Length: 468
Ligand SMILES: Nc1nc2c(ncn2[C@@H]2O[C@H](COP(=O)(O)OP(=O)(O)O)[C@@H](O)[C@H]2O)c(=O)[nH]1
Ligand SMILES: [Mg+2]
Image: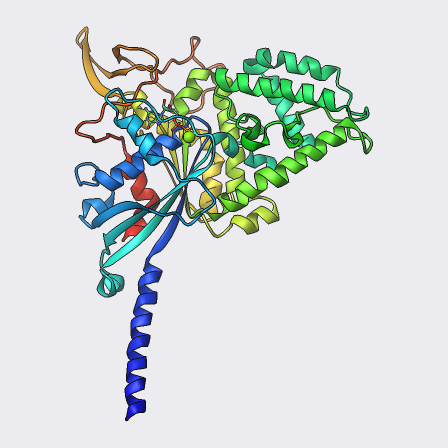
């Protein structure tokens, strides 16, 4: 009799444990990679995402995010992160900037940060809804300096290949004026000579100076090594003291060339690889933010360079051509969204064109991704709205203008943006005076609420299916 009682109790316990385990398996983690080169809007995107999900998740505000539109989202809140060794994203400071009376953009990111949001929602229907009508998804977001993303393609290069590609870039028309000083120092550099620490340091510093100038003066994305721009605790370490040179394959063992080669390899193995392994190969979903309009402002060379840089980075995400990257990456990311960000710098009717332009810039990359079973979409978004649309009558014509406070200026401006191209232009097709799109301060929040353009579309594509 007793035995029967125990068995029944055990059975009950088992049933309850199974139920718990089942519920736990419904508590899912999604790691969302918010990627993009420096200045593409990653920090602002993460801040806006947290703000809209935690305090503005209404049908009116996020109509295309199903879990919200269907009234199933119960609540979202920030919870302690799993990765204890990464600083927490400072949401409070970043949102304070956007919500201030005189809103400003959050400062640029100097290190890696993370934040986890728990989203509690009612399941849509079916078995899961029957057993557990409420489920929780943990959304992990990672913010990092965009310069580090630009380093990933170095993983598949050796020093000679990297040097050749970098020097070729520095000699292009748009950049050669900046590169002059470094390139002439390089002319006198003898890679076959014995290691001269001082000379290597001088050249590395000149190269670092060049990278900083290119960062402030152009929109060049491939500024490698990225840690030269944000060295953190590596400042001055020999691992960062390298630069591209012309090939010296015959250089002997203790030559300068060999020393540079060794530093390049060490940088890849000790700096880029751990970042890649710890973060990038763990992601489930990926958002790639692209600042198409700034690239257009910067000219035909920069648009071309952004296109190449995206292709290089996507090759790494493209589950790697080489075996080891493929093994590390393959099964993970199954959805990638490419977003032409800051789309409210142009009028609503021009926004589709910048999404088309981005699509054209990506070319074969999206096809390759789709072929590997990844769903891909392209759209124009602005995670934080910085302008309003204003229709101005001019000579009987209705002109769709944008209205906002131009960055660095005090007054509000109504401005007619130039027509962006909807595909990549050749140098011959490029308009003689180029493009000039303006940048704006964030719009002032209304009753503590931020505004966005298609953030809900982006969320639906990226995580909507995990919230059903
Ligand atoms: N209009 C608009 N501008 C943005 C948006 N996000 C970022 N920006 C602009 O881009 C700059 C860089 O943004 P940030 O989030 O720091 O880029 P990150 O380097 O990728 O993290 C900001 O200072 C703004 O000028 C956005 O959603 N809309
Ligand atoms: Mg940032």
